[in-house]
Image (cartoon, rainbow, N blue to C red):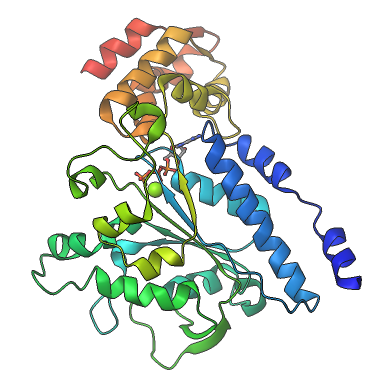
Amino acid sequence: MREKREIYRFLHVTPRRIFEQLDQYVVGQRHAKEVLAIAAYNHLKRIEYLKFGGEVSIRKSNILMIGPSGSGKTYLARTLAKILDVPFAYNDATAFTEAGYYGEDVEVAIGRLLYATNQNVDAAENGIVFIDEIDKISRRAGGLRTGSGGRDIGGEGVQQALLKILEGEKIFVPLNVTAHWNKYDYVEIDISNILFICAGSFSDMDDANDGKTVGFVEQNGANSREITSEDLVKYGFLPELLGRLPVRVELDELSAADLVNILTNPREAMVPEYQRLCALDQIQLEFTSEALYEVAYAALRQKLGARALRAILEKVLHPILFLGPERAGERIVVEADDVRRIVQQ
Ligand SMILES: Nc1ncnc2c1ncn2[C@@H]1O[C@H](COP(=O)(O)OP(=O)(O)OP(=O)(O)O)[C@@H](O)[C@H]1O
Ligand SMILES: [Mg+2]
């Protein structure tokens, strides 16, 4: 079969290679990285298969990522797009409204993809659309959040609108993604190959499930279990929408050791970044391992996961960065006590 050979020649990536690249940036979350690597590989394979005239349909596998704040959901999706070198569009579900209300129509998500490719329709048709804060458009969240009372303009209506883009075929997309686009500037896009990744923290999931602990299995201990479709329906999602997000992945809460790892090891780690910054002023900046753990504990106390790390580090390094060039030639070691003193302020 000609087409099969062509596909394999084209795809010099494998799920393992995608995983290994994700691994250079994202700490922990082994399972999530594997699931995303497989989904991404299948996405590329599907595109190649169709390009070479494949006819049997391979269903696309849109993804739903669930995990605590600052555990790496958005970072994983962004890193994936960078690795795959496919167009990527970030969207915040809370900005979407049902057609006819003030706010963004869901089609804008595709418009952003087009914008990311400089209006290259072919490239956009194979891109990845990321929809963050998907938990905020659950049915019950809608009315509460927008204060619209009974009219659920931010919840079910948006879910209905998303249904048609998650597995749609051709839609008209605004060329201009700003709020006041000219209503005649549209282009037709085939969205059947666009991969959708939705993510949310679902932090109040337990309240929706009679106070029982669900999800985030690793850290919550014996009582927790995996989040099921039933849980998500109870939370306020349309079963049809869940059916269009067949790949589920739960991220773990990051431990203190993970956070220390994030500070020092991955490709975009913060500590080496600050060390380079100081080195430019001829300062040799170092942290004791205890100091790094103090930074991690401070982040854990804030319950923002890795998201809190940068602000804490900025605060800790403030006195050093302020004096900067005046201390040229010195070796400065940040100790646990320094961190404790500063984060308590
Ligand atoms: N597992 C991780 N490995 C490396 N860095 C991480 C990881 N998780 C988070 N980070 C860092 O923390 C920042 C915030 O994480 P991210 O935006 O991915 O959180 P999130 O899971 O999307 O949280 P939220 O639910 O609050 O949106 C990232 O930009 C990245 O620098
Ligand atoms: Mg996020």
